[in-house]
Length: 252
Image 1 (tube, rainbow, N blue to C red):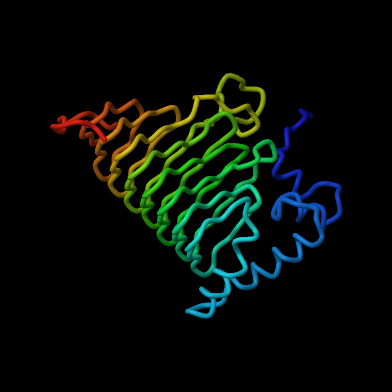
Image 2 (image 1 turned 30 degrees about the vertical axis):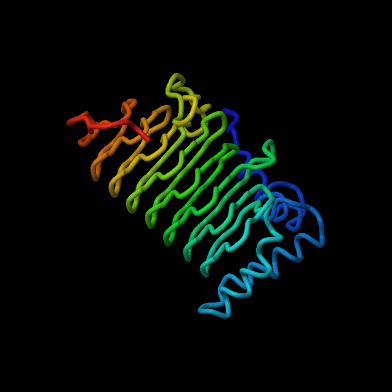
């Protein structure tokens, strides 16, 4: 019988360590008893609705993070994984039901949300040993998924607007070379990550595949699938996305 490769995340959750150690390594991101207790207290505040919950989270939650600026608002039902690897700027708004998963032991900061960013409800940002960087004044639409993998980061510039239900990945699709083992057990491809430059606007349900650069000031229409680079100031649409026309003026 062939040896089956088990993913690191699966090992962290189901391995031979005690259940407390597994929880600390896969969820909390620290083995400090005091930090774990503080994390548990803060996560209980996540379910408190209304103004009372907002005030409690505003006061207690900033200490969970690598850094947290002033005036940050946290909605209810937010899920945090390894918050000590998340950096949040000033006046950031994180809507209810968002998931911030910064599991990347090799990075001091795996997720960075810069000043004045707004995450709408149920946005998911996940780092599977990758890095996500979001610039200032970005708006992320509801139910959008941003996923970075190892050596496949996602970088979003300033003043970027993402519509609802977008899917942004840095890459990490499985290799297909071997047929003697399942696809899910093969290594992932390195694409170099994905970049949205300053002033980009993606319509609702846009899918951005790994290794793609969308140039500054570009617009991508609703439902498009971006598989190749989009130049600055272009308007693209379709599956796969193709350039429809160019905007006039200088890029941001």
